[in-house]
Length: 488
Image 1 (cartoon, helix red, strand yellow):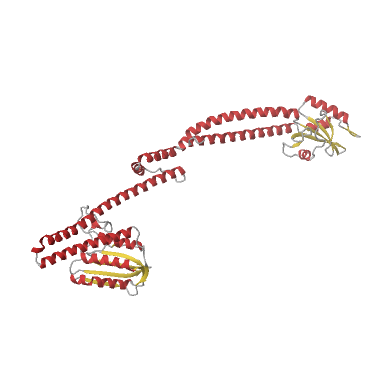
Image 2 (cartoon, rainbow, N blue to C red):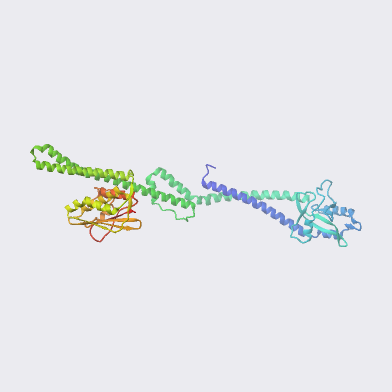
């Protein structure tokens, strides 16, 4: 059984079921035919006992006439050996019979079947068989009466022992012949049905098995080819079709994940290249000025030396900030950072952050405006991280808003959140950068417009830890508008 295919197993099971059904059908047919033939015999012989009782002096004034009974019984059984004739008294006791010595196994006959037959019950009606108490046979019976008083019964078993023996052998041979013929036909047609029907039924499974085998040897190319194939359009109730649809769906998800991994890998390569570029620029400048100071220190004036040192210090700070942002982004992306939530006033936090950038805004003649709806409730978040979010957004806004521009922060309550919106009137975000604004920047892109950089990436990671996110709001006026929410 272990080495059989699914189609072969189905064929074998189907064949065995057909054989069992044919055997049961043959048995039921034999039983039905036997019952029908007995009913016919009983109908044809229903008046036999009555005719015998009417035409033979089985009774006398003194009761039963045993001599007449014995002589009659011998004559009847000589003419028709299949019948067995018995004379019963009114209680059903056998008082006369022609059975050979020792063949009579029962001396009393149940009168209920006799009464049922005499009262016209539907045939066949089965009664006792005195020669074999374990079986019941069809019979003919008639009452023996004197002056309207029943003195006994004549009881004729229509299918005696000899008939039963002969018919049993014939029925057994017939049943064996029918069973063998049916089994032969069933095996023939069962195998044919298995080769045709079950092969058609199991065709999707064989196809699925072939696809799985190709995946084992073909790798990702086979998975991608399977993902591009059409799923079977059979009914959802078909388990095989459902399995194929699920398997093709799984291949499509694997292909999508693989494509996503390839994109992420490409982004990682571009990110490394970008960071290398961002680091190389200030480091090159820093190295150049330091080298100038080292080689030409004696020929430089104090003002030039101080200017070179200030430039080198500025470039050193850029490298330090970039390294700090990289470290912070890595900690956020890999789940190292743990939130320390506490209730605090977001309105007061906005005012505190404004104070940090007040000098930078004044230098650029920019206005910092706060539009805060009265009654803003406390929020539940990590105070330091939300401060970092506001700091990064305001720093970006100040750096990319022209002199004399305006930067506005709005706060309002919506459902169970406080919505924060920060917008400026600068040049805004280029349309080609909007889709990748919060993704890792790349210098390999042909686009030279500014992107979000590491600052917006850090902002998004912090907000994701709080179950929120940042979006770029479309607006008709020039400038950029960012919006995020903080839970109350």
